[in-house]
Length: 133
Image (cartoon, rainbow, N blue to C red; front, side, top):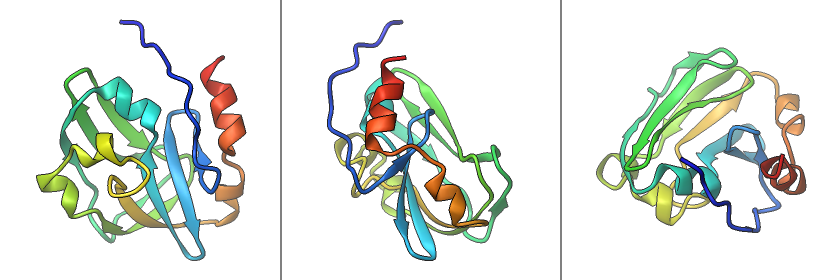
C-alpha cells in the first residue's frame, strides 16, 4: 500500500526519530508520542498497549504497540529510558493519537538514561527532510 505524505509543519520544539516518534524535552522527564505522519499511516487508532510505569527499557526495546485500521506500529526509542507515567486517557480514547498526536495523544513520560541522547535526535527540519528520502 502506498501512502501519500501530505506536506506538514512539524512542531519545532520537539525532536524526532526517523521511525516517526517525537520527544518533548522537559528537563528531567521527556514526553514521547508518534508524529502525525505515523498516525495518518495507521488510520483510526483502536488500541494502544502502554508500558508500565517503572519499566526500564534498553535502546530499541518495545515501549508500546499501537493498532489502527490501516496498520500497526511498534514504538521503540534509540536510547535507554525509565517509564515514569503513561497517558491514562489512551485506554478509553486511543483516537487521541489521531486527533491530537502532539498534545493529548502523548504516550508516556520517561526519564532518559542520558539526556544527551535527546540532542542526537532529528530537529523538525531534519525529520521533514527524512520523509522525502
